[in-house]
Image (cartoon, one colour):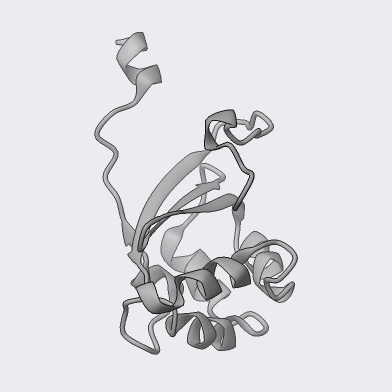
Length: 132
């Protein structure tokens, strides 16, 4: 992440109406750099993003600050949380990936992704504030 100016932001293409989920997870400080390494586009197992997309996730980003990771996930409006994550758990290498990344996370081993990552409550929306 050296040389990256976070104030430049991250470009995203505009999307249609979506549901957005924010989630967080506490990481193991001793293995933080390994977690970052394995989540870079060139290092992640290719079956993992393919399975996430097949499960109905349109966009997903993970940000880190210290030992905390924040995930922002967008889905279609008709996305069904339980059904989609149930399917994801059956996809190729997904269980193996969950076991692999568990060593970098402060969570119980053997838990699926939707159990490890905690949903965050949105308390402010600029768009809603302006429109009301």
